[in-house]
Image 1 (cartoon, rainbow, N blue to C red):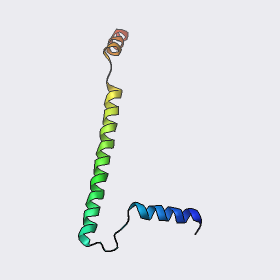
Image 2: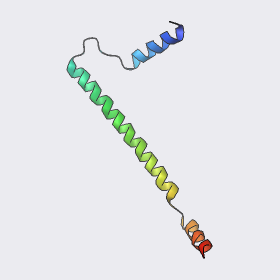
Image 3: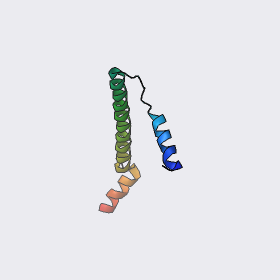
Image 4: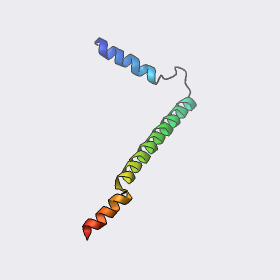
Length: 72
């Protein structure tokens, strides 16, 4: 194994360390927290995408007036 792989493995194991003597209750709690965080950030991402889409589709009054004038 080269140094890069060793460093990556060392960092990855430090991000989510599994307790050596963790009970099944601890594992369930960790999974619930992970799911909760994933759901939270997914909702934030979805809300941001909706906000951007709404902002893109809303016309200012000047744009609306110019669209109507050009249609005549």
